[in-house]
Length: 417
Ligand SMILES: [Zn+2]
Ligand SMILES: [Zn+2]
Image 1 (cartoon, rainbow, N blue to C red):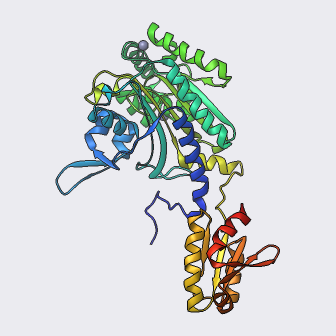
Image 2 (cartoon, rainbow, N blue to C red):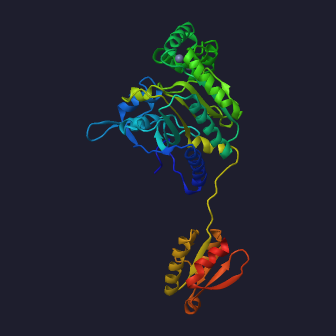
Image 3 (cartoon, rainbow, N blue to C red):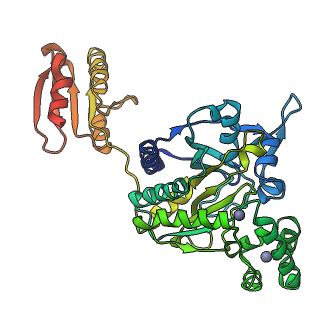
């Protein structure tokens, strides 16, 4: 048997690096006042149709949608923002002091072509700040992501920044863009022609060189912002200035969801080749209202665990499993009893301790202690039981000490401190 296509197992050796990434993200988000939220693995399909947008690739092609035994249409969540906004509305969080700042670490599901670092089930870390239109918030989120990548050591990180305007300036721009796309229609791929019809902004996502060449002279939204959007965008940039974070203004940066407004940003790791995006986010001032809540500005970001892992591995950064502190070696029934009690005490003191569960000989147990890299071995045989004292062996020096059963756990803790 094999795991389903596009899925993977996270084995124990893969966990330490992931835990480090998770731990750094949690530290950064907690210090910025974000509280963790968990939402269900599946939601009503309509949440994503309304929230992500019916014309998006995600809704049209990539969702795992199924009918449950009660005849409801449900979907495994393909992204993290719509569920968090749903929870914000459902729990009346608009009555709390604003903005409400939430973060999550969850599994997402998309039916995509599997490739390096892209899976059909993947882990995403994200944050949402709902209830503020303040440009300082956008800049703060950008800097949190920068800090995360920097503190982890992700190499060659580049930031692209843009604005997607709002309901005031975007419609007129989309009209201009549509006109332009008609004029170059014969140079566009089939996908782009469909995008031009359904959601013209998406043509900028196309990876075909011929399309990119045809779009080189296309009007860009960033050059067609209304006054309010321009002021907001200028302010975001001003808040970024003192941090010295370099970025590229990029009018072709269009996030894949319909709900984005104004600030959008994306982080790339140049080492990851064609699919180099590692995370991104932006403002979505209309989503809360679109999902049935009061008119509420908001911003968020998300970053894929697998992409960060790939980027770190490209720099030779890996995690390390903690080694065993103590291995218990015993022979004879009475000795095993005594060893079990001491093992429990040692673990209770926060040390990593293990013993033999495979019926090994004393020699075999000693070998196992070595294999696990134990720093100390505690040996209990008939003589030790009779004397009420364990033999503690330093695995590196080979030096042995006799220590009373009652105090051996504490003695070891002091020794290893
Ligand atoms: Zn505008
Ligand atoms: Zn194309």
